Length: 308
Ligand code: AMP
Ligand code: MG
Image (cartoon, rainbow, N blue to C red; front, side, top):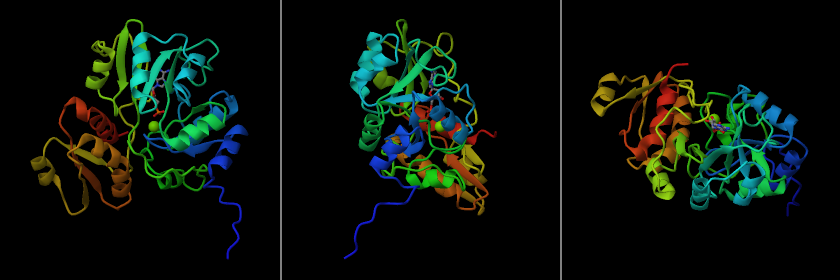
């Protein structure tokens, strides 16, 4: 009996409305399989500037350009080394970002002033539809204020920006739940700049060569700060269960991680958001083992625990 009226909820646009906002040079939070991203047209300087402003992100921190198709990499990368081609063929669409030499015309606003550009083809159906419908290339850093916990569902985005949240295209909870693996590739080899869902072991099997030793040749990866992804409540990391139990008081909350690294990653930000809101004095967590399959969760926990 009710006639359907057009949705007027400006904070919860549907796909068509989100496309219209992006085409008009606006900003929309979009679901991806990793975390929610604050999306804007990568070729629109004012829209990209608005992303930096909303996030309060330093201007030298590069943004990842999200593409609808792997073929579109040629519009952004000056060259695509064979190893990068293999990574793209194996992982895209999906949670892997490739940092490659940038074409001259790539705005240095997007690359944080560097001559490399970070590229990813996400596999969330709404992200792909949004990218394809709005011009083919969106910057989309995590949809949270700089340094804070990343959002793995629409509610986290709406809560994270206080009384001025961006509109959110709601795609439900994120499947992977933590940010993409970021890999730098040039003709001399490859190197992980940020651990994620794709492990060093898996990438080595695809590349057929081991990663180059850390340090030396890779570009800066700003955003890899000691303190990042942090809840407001202090997070205390313990090497083992006995240490945690010795520290625990009735005022503390304990972060329980799944014994499966991918399940632990998928639940990580949601659990941290919940414990952060619980009123606990501290969050205690046991650091998972120092093995390649746990590298991404260990990385996020370690940065979340370092005092700012
Ligand atoms: P996010 O804030 O999750 O979008 O992550 C972007 C991250 O990707 C940055 O913090 C850098 O670590 C990395 N990154 C992006 N673009 C570049 C680039 N051009 N060169 C090196 N690292 C980059
Ligand atoms: Mg982030």
